[in-house]
Image (tube, rainbow, N blue to C red; front, side):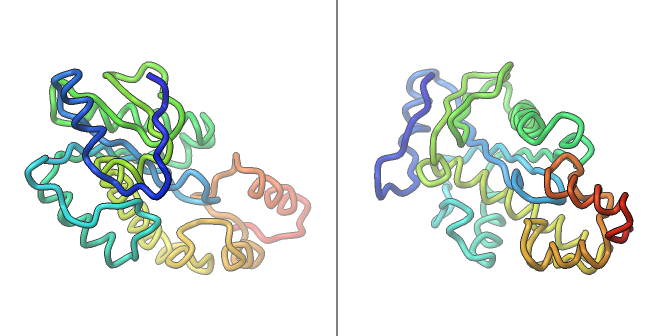
Length: 221
């Protein structure tokens, strides 16, 4: 199916889910990811089938919510919905590239839902190849579909927690604040400590740093 585009000033609702349910007679999962752009850490994908009678209030694109609001919505989603989370580790990202690692995680998260058959709404403009079910791409979906918004919240909260835990072991990069993105704080930490096993070596900024390390211009870790 052609990707759906959101109208201006739209807010997440259940309209797309209702349309797919009417068309295919299947429950509908929202699928989204967090962490495609950072220099370090995994990419995390979530698939969420909301209970139409127990949709949490205040679902929205995770980037528009405060950390406190995301945590509150996360708890409600986990208590009321069918949820699957898949973590694409750095080794997979470096082996397959970030796009393919994300698409793998999307397929796997949907496949791992404890529902025999379902349809899916995926945030973005493309449908992963070999997707194991009926699927529709939704541009700006986390601001249009409450199911995709829920998936974005689950993925974001899960990944943020991972990065905070990693920050306690790999100190000096500020991951508790920047979550692995290429901020000045993160860049400064790399200058002081070099890269670590959780940095994405396939990313151009990290490749440049590796080259400097090999030349002895920066420390290794």
